[in-house]
Length: 375
Image (cartoon, rainbow, N blue to C red; front, side, top):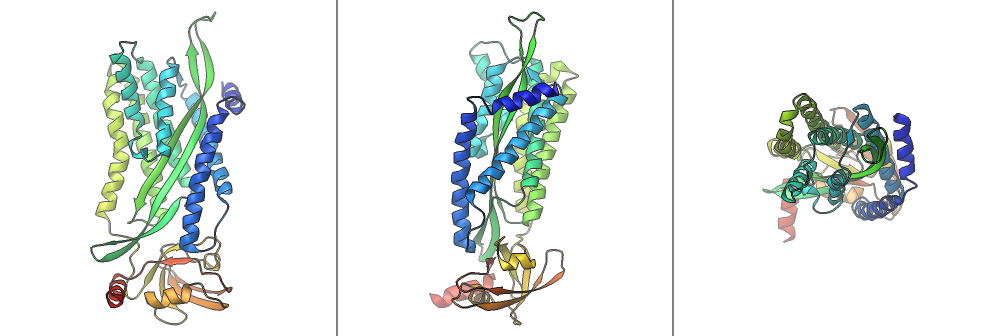
């Protein structure tokens, strides 16, 4: 069986459906180009090529799709309804658009089920529904794993003002295509009664959130953990119901609610926690550091707090002037406190016409005082 899965997965890239992969590659490349432009505007010199990041994103997606295909084989997932399954998962393409927040595989399944009922066609069988929810659970767990493995790519720094308080944070935008193969049963025209074919299936998912109360590393763990938790709940629910087939239709309203739980829990955490990136008069928090900058090479990271700049207590005005782009070569000496509380002493040389690649959050009091004086 696993040889057939692998063969079907390889054949997928030689089929006309390869056009889907090419079209999505263009969408990913446009997204990466926009993100690279914004990061260059905020942090200075550009990082890796958008084409490189597009390739990495596609490779992660292909790896995730292959893992889903293998796990589906382990759980012996197969479907009798071909068109319905394809429609349910192809609707996830809206995850790549501004309507991504409305993408919910549980709702898709309910929609297709009700449509068949209204058209007075044969409903999705209990076995197909059970296997569908098993697949959704597996897919969500793999998505959580991909989010964690891809790391901090897709984090765009933002600085917001709320209630006379300056806060730093990140707009998180991650999206993937997961091409895979699934088993579909054919019951007509076969000598043995039914035959199993492994056919391509494409699904998409995205993560679009605002992070204000977590560090980058913490938010990755939260996003990944919630995906894996929700996927585990769906998988466990479908597995338990598989022993009581008369309960199958209870999954139709239950699974969408479980999937909504993911975003609901994250929103609750964001409301209950204190903002993470807030500077004080004593310490100025580093929001982002260019990955190809000297500061990054020396060990400065997002979330570190500057306690001394060139031997002096940091103020936002002095930090901006000192860390900006100048026409002459200059040494930079920083003392910082890491997220773990450990002290850091950094020294590096900035070449003429280049910036330090460091973005800091201004202290609220100093910022609004400067704003009032300028007006």
